[in-house]
Image (cartoon, rainbow, N blue to C red; front, side, top):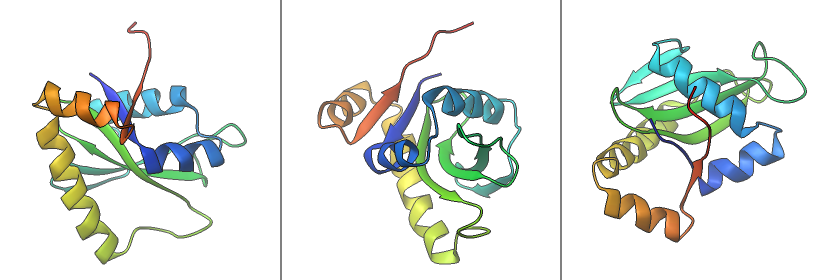
Length: 127
């Protein structure tokens, strides 16, 4: 499984001390059906630890995921900022998730997005 983050998410993660290792761990937990919410259409909410705190009461991520495909981190927020995403945010994120999940079937499109830095691949070593 490949793990990606959008350009926006990457900036947010850096600002909030969310490491790539935390993202990889979260992606594999999602793969094992361990997450906080499934909004449907491949949109998942997953808690992620940051360097200052553990998972509880801290950082929430929204990602696009479908079994057997890639994982795309697209949005993040602190629990202290808000409890959940709004209905309008959910609708917009579902559109983005759907688009990214269709790209996962096209290596050419993924390469284009990596080349123009719209997507960043999170590198990790398989265990």
